[in-house]
Length: 200
Image (tube, rainbow, N blue to C red; front, side, top):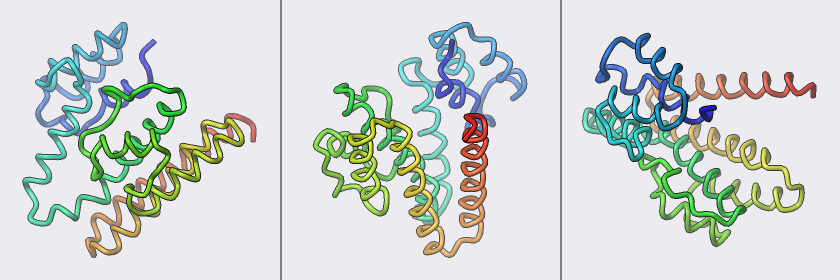
């Protein structure tokens, strides 16, 4: 079975304009991949990236394309915080398990992956800016007390959107503000669906 994380990345529309075939053809091909290795190979061929870490390479390429096209790169930062958040969550969970997150982190966040990894390993998140730095420490403390892994995700997601909203407001760009609102609505909806599915 292919992990959800890999399917989400593989089916992303971020690089759709540069891939081979129509979006429908690609999605069908990705969906029919028998295992993770086959999915990575398909993504690599479709989007013209390496097979070593095709998802990160494809996303990084798309992000760099956007950054090169706009005069004020800081406008995009609120939209990159989700990658920072994903990196922090992954690094914290790996630190708890005593493993190194090799190949698991995005290269397109605003905080270097090495900084995130070091913070998680030392439990010192002062180098992580904004609410996410505070939330990472809080999430780790909650996990140590309760053993509840979902606390890490929920705590950091809330902080991430607080940082995104703050940065979007400061940017003064209505498009960025609206994108942040839509993303927050999407996460809230998915969270509500998951809670309902669990009968809470």
